[in-house]
Amino acid sequence: MTGARPTECCAACAHFVDDPRELERRLTGLTILSSAWGDTRGDQGLCEAHALFLQPVMTCPRFVGRPPTGAVR
Amino acid sequence: MAEDRAGRRTLFSTEDTWAIWLGLLVIFSCLAAFWAGGTLKHLAVTPGSWSTFAELSADFVKKAPAFGAVFLFFFVAFTVSMKIMGREIKQFMIGFVVLFLGALAVFYLAGWSAMKRLDLGAPLLALVIGMIIGNLRTMPDWLKAALRTEYYIKTGIVLLGATLPMTLIATAGPVAFLQATIVSVTTWLTIFLAATRIFGLDPRFGAVLGTGGAVCGVSGSIAIGGAVRAEKDHIAIGIAVVSVWAIVMIFTLAFLTKIMIPPLGAAATEWWQISPGEAGAWVGTSEYADAAGFAVVAEIATTYGDAAINAFTLMKVIGRDIWIGIWAFILSIVSVVYWEKKSDADGPTGRVGIGVVWQRFPKFVLGFFAASVLMSLIAAAPPVDYVGRAPVDGTFKSDAQTYKYSADFTDYTVPPELGERFSFDPADGEIVFLGEMSLDQLDLLSRNADAEQRWALKQLHRSSSWFESELDPEVITPIKKLRSWAFVLCFLCIGLSTRFADLLTFGLKPFWAFTIGVVVNVPLGWFLSTQVFDSFWSALR
Image (cartoon, rainbow over all chains, first blue to last red; front, side, top):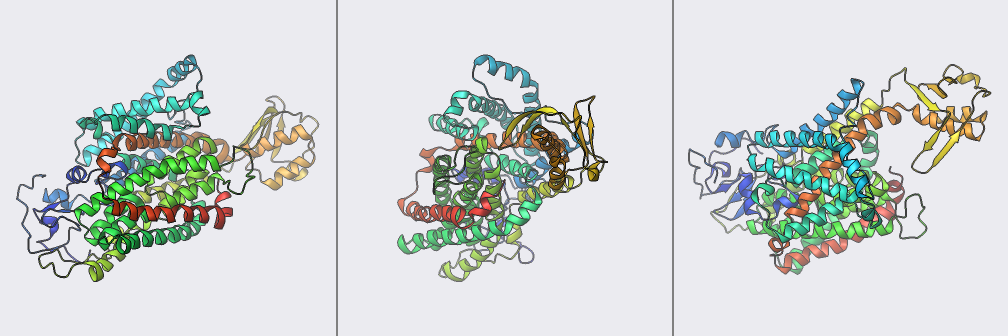
């Protein structure tokens, strides 16, 4: 990516789902011929706020920090 | 979790990197056994052919310990890697036992003479059986945990690298790249334009569909989805459409190529007949996912050898897959400049940098290259004192010929130029050659020989090759057997995880947009593979 990741980016946002287990559960059929644990998915994830599939470096006004426990949702 | 996320992209956290480690572990294990004077070929086995239950039982009893060893290796390797990746392994372990037993059953079913008469190999049987079970019953979670199609195929592809010489990759690479580029760009533009101009779909959706058809299937759709900020539904529908078409094409291409390839040993007599190499290149341009394409070419390989697998790998993995990062980078720029709605004030912003080219690069391909380089270097440096031996009474076997010969070298006159390298050992009934015999040297030796002696000399020529007589049977063969296991595990996973009721939920617009791409892609792939670059692909072995 271009330079350092901003602090308030998708990677640190509570709306951002990048856990591979959860992605494979939400995207039906993903595991038939692919995987959420591979490099082509990498660290991309689903934004629940915008219903978009995004790179983790994106930023937006609806950023909400992840809870400190960081439990897998 | 934050630390976990930060460290996730390490050398031990993705299936890509683990496929490299497992593949190289297999290759180094086979090499270590060979350098220690042994071989793993007695452990790395697959079920044999059978006609009667007695033959089946005998084969199983004989190979059962080896099956146990293969199972143990894969079970431990996959379980440990899953654990390190941070995944639930209790369910995986149970599921993998069942999956492996299923693969064993499929191998044995494919070895049955009745299946051979039907021309059904293990790859297609695994798919069909898996699909029947998967669509009749809901898979339990413990079995789902072991259905890791992508992981098994990536491991198999790394192992494949050990059997594909680097020189072949270097010479074939430019042709594969040229053909793949023509097909990829044409297919992508067709699907994209059909999606956006004919059916009025969002351009980002068109890009997701187009990349799925043109580059690397579902993985391509995912990689591009993030780069162009596609909607979640675009990704979900893209996955479904690409998967359905990929599976349809497995059966279509397997059926067509089986008809179009002439019987083993026969030359093509009709304009529409194609060689296994051309078939592999065609599948490489017209299948949408690695695992799906390998199902077709592995099926061809059960009868015609590895030419189709090699051509497919060059076309799909090297010609198409490795460029996904560049597609992601270019389309991310196009998306920002042309496609995104500027009115969405609270939408996500940010730029995708050039680093995405490396981030989306399928790293397991590096393992494939490493395996190829490693084995090519070893094959290029045979021991200087290697001595080839051939019996004076024996059988010469090649892909094209089998001949049982009986020669007498008692009165044979050795050409003086080769007097120090060729000898006859009457006590052991063998002829011997020091070092690797060239074709010119074979020709020289054959001038003084009668017909039977020539067959024995041909056999000696072959056995003087350290690669063919030592490295190939002792190292490459066990690697190929383990590759076959990885592939059949993968094909069974595709079948078991494909539930058409779950997939067939998309609307007709994306389906037809993709279908138009298929209609262009398949004939174009056939034309380029069999009419434009046919001499190149036909020569591939």
